[in-house]
Every structure is written in structure tokens, then in C-alpha cells.
Length: 71
Image 1 (tube, helix red, strand yellow):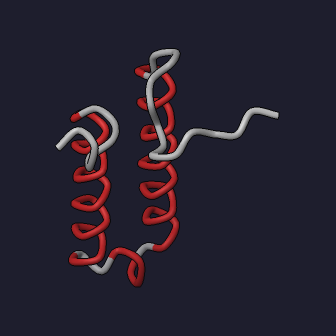
Image 2 (spheres, helix red, strand yellow):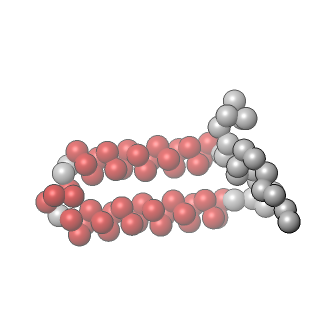
């Protein structure tokens, strides 16, 4: 399964948190009642996700299926 699911389980958990958070925001209809708070939460989710990936990335870790062409 490692060939199918690239990345650490933490990254897949992070993906589930993002999807769950967006689902919750949509279920609460926050985007129609309080748009500024909605945008703030979405930006915070995005920033936190990027920071988690940057802080936990190890040099040499495989991130794509195909290698990059080195010119």
C-alpha cells in the first residue's frame, strides 16, 4: 500500500481534518451567515496544513510517484 498512498499517515490525517472541517463549516452554513469568520477559518486551516507539512518533511522523502527530471 505504500506505493499507492505516498506520504506519512500524518499527512493523510491532516487531509481528513481539512475535509471534516470544510464539511462542518458547510453544514453550519457559515459561508452564508458570517463570511468573514468562514474565510478566516479556511485560511487558518490552509496555513496550519502548510506549516505541518513543512515542519515534518524530511530531506529525501518521496513526494511524487514519478521522479523529477534533473537537467
